[in-house]
Image (cartoon, rainbow over all chains, first blue to last red; front, side, top):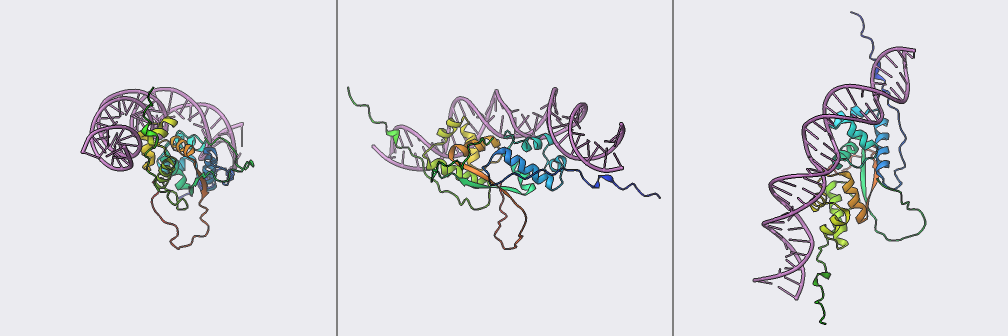
Length: 108
Length: 108
DNA sequence: TGTATAAGTAAACTATAGTTGACCTTTAAT
DNA sequence: ATTAAAGGTCAACTATAGTTTACTTATACA
């Protein structure tokens, strides 16, 4: 019997994207970029992740675009799967220094 | 003209709740408790907040119970309003120490 | 202990997030 | 230049989050 042609699909083509600066203030877009970076770093396609988590590709894409009109549950599922998590920060509004260290960029 | 009877409703009755330990791992319930703590600390009622943000009281209650079947957008709105924010953590799976410092509690 | 206000629940309805399947575009390897 | 797989969009449909209104339960206090 002849050899099966070696599956060429073994070497996946998933382009890595850069991890954003996680020390910067939270925004949904920064979260989205972190998710994409994690996913591509793990050489997983959108379909890989959506199948693993039972969410649709369009929904995953919404999340990876920073769209906040998605279920919180789905965001958490994706983050957990890719090894991302939140920590909680209480803006204690102590030390109101006027130095522009805190940017007022939009978070959504 | 006689004095109007001083509105007795000036002293609001909003019971403060304790702020959870924000250094512990993220969970939606911990987030929920932080939200409630922030709100009550600011002497705001559920109706105050839901009106200010144009979300319904039942939805706010879902959020304050840690229900993750809510829109990400609504969670972010509430957090912003109360002065809570996320920071992003990438579980780099370096230093896999086997000491039970990392609890495996559920996060939803 | 009655009263006022906050918290919480429930049901019927509305709005919208999510899915499916098809399709187009992009990219990288041969 | 073709091809194969990934990324991304769209439209029709389904599932479900969110709203409204009303009601119940708790809590403080006069």
